[in-house]
Amino acid sequence: MQFTELGLSAELLRAIGEQGYTTPTPVQQQAIPHILAGRDLEALAQTGTGKTAAFVLPLLQRLSQAPSGQTSSPLQKLTHTAPRVLVLVPTRELAAQVLASVRTYGAHTGLRALAVFGGVGINPQIQSLRRGIDILVATPGRLLDHLGQRTVDLSKVQTLVLDEADRMFDMGFIRDIRRIIEKLPKVRQNLMFSATFAAEVRELAHAVLQNPALVEVARRNAPAELVTHTVIKVDKEQKRDVLLHLFAAHGWHQVLVFCRTKHGADALTRKLEQSGVRSAALHGNKSQNARTRALADFKAGKLAALVATDIAARGLDIDSLPRVVNFELPNVPEDYVHRIGRTGRAGASGEALSLVSSDERIQLRDIERLLKREIESSILPGFEPQHTHAVPRPSAGRPPAHKPAPARNRSSSGRPGAPRPARAGGGAAKPASHHSGQRHR
Image (tube, rainbow, N blue to C red; front, side, top):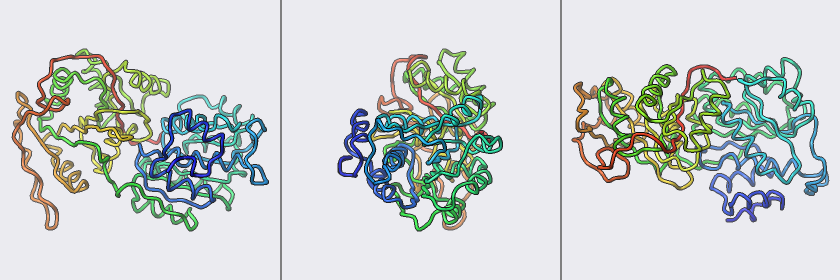
């Protein structure tokens, strides 16, 4: 199937062609016809599947329709004072990504869009809202700020999009979302996108969606299929040295490194920088300007490592990220899937490497249960762990945990044991993600 077969306008097809696309992804093929038809939609789709364009393209088309049903001229003034589409997202980074997609694909439609989120001044946002917009992309906290100041009018919203609904639950936004929904017209189109359909997401879907079409393009909690999973067993105290060794031995230049805490991300970034590996930290305590600059430098190849908490596990749009390193395993196994979703995107292969200490053996077992398979493990020569990695005997019905595998050499693909000349710094890196436990407005 080609984009030309989906019933999109000439203006949208022109913008799609300018980006070099001709064939829609599976989620776009399935979702676009339902959204164009005005149906509510419940979509299970991981990041990297093209889900943003799956709702942006048909919504641009619907907004561009004149009352007669014919597509308006791109020169015709279409902008309304109050937004007709509201897209709620969990993080600032995802808000910026969705806005960029709207502007890219809507370049020839005359429609206006705005993203509002915390960490930046509210007055420029108020001025833009007063000038009038068609599509509003917002994080829940900042949108409530605008509602409190009566600087935004949601009475004309025709379509509500809840993007990455499961992450919004994780970040504690459900109350805010319910308060926002109360301000919307009762009759509207509702679209919900989520990487997982946990029980609380299902509950919200049943409350918000009316007879929705269901689109599912990935197995529940499925990891990216093109990602190789590897574990290096190491003592906790040696993790930093092991990571530095891997950068030097394999010339890594584009790595997203995940830590559990903001403090840990900052400490690891300092260690990498002191050792000549250009790095930056990305987490909730960083200002919006610092976060934007770190991500831009990472994309531009100015950084070899982006050290992040789980706030970056979703919503970071980085092409062809070759490698994600779990410096620490997440406490929630589903977050492992979200982290590694940064690599192995758009048909490219990727690697998820985890440094696992003995105190993380339970988290490793839970991740393997979620993946329904054991992850290949090795011990790096010169960094043999002194503490046991034995996993407690699993209860009945659970798959047994794997036994430590002997160290082995691998091919020179940047994996443990590959004999490559050392190179300590330089190159590009890809972002990591961290969930700080705070709400991000």
